[in-house]
Image 1 (cartoon, rainbow, N blue to C red):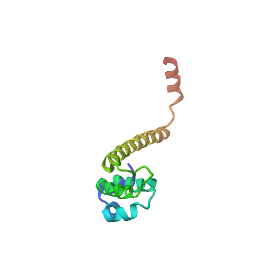
Image 2: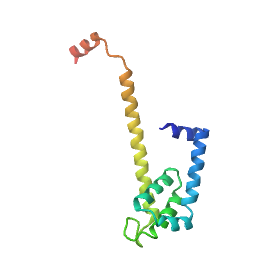
Image 3: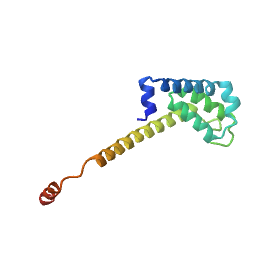
Image 4: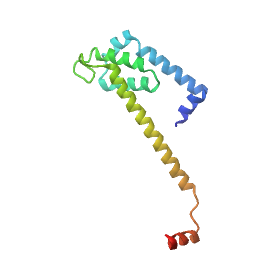
Length: 135
């Protein structure tokens, strides 16, 4: 878990400031008029990046509005066409985000284990010889 995540969960001022900023982004990009006017000007990759931020900050409804606004002007990209379903697309992105977070947690645990291992003093020569004899 990152220091920033811990701050947010602990309610520290830095975490509250970030959470307030993310609320503001959710309000801006989750506004249907803004999403329609501005979202159509973004590439699919750019629209996805904004949606990721909204999803990561638990603002899925704003991400759906944002992507629907983007999709309204996307005639040849990933989100274009009548068949695009922003809610289903967001559910898939949310699932991918959860998998990425879980992978980051596993990596952090392994990295901590390796740091702990590096900090462990080497075994005395007698112990190594004893293990070699009985191993």
